[in-house]
Image 1: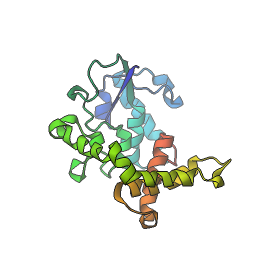
Image 2: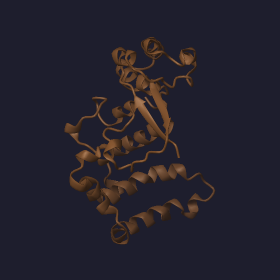
Image 3: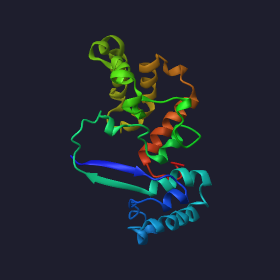
Image 4: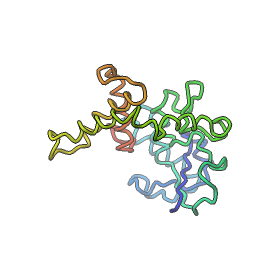
Length: 219
């Protein structure tokens, strides 16, 4: 299976003008004439993006979400000879630039405010990948029946109840997912989950589902 590697360019004319890879802009009608773009044309393309979207979105959103979303290069290469856990394939901050705004107000990594093992390079996880091993120790098969099985079974009993026969299940699944998530991880029951937390969770799902920052629902 081919491995896809994405390189996300930082917003701003300086970074755009010095980029050496070709952005995948051909899917966007405004910029079809610019694909493929020479490095010197990237700043011009970015300027046109700013001009088009400034009427609908705040400048910070355009710079940190819309521009990185469009000025992206996708590379197709041979399957790696190294295991995915190798240092040469570090996952440090391996998140598209346009999604960092979901995690903090700075629009960029902020390790001083906390990190997640899923975006942390192997070399920073401690001896023998310790942080990941600690995480995985909570989801071993011997713990499932004792700690999680009842909660998961109750979740699917509600989802697959006779009352949902003939109905699309994605909406009730998404509505009940956070009840399961917070109960599994922290033992917080549905009535104790603040509305604000539910709103944040639903917003995450919405952004990841649409994955188009030019739509108002994503904004």
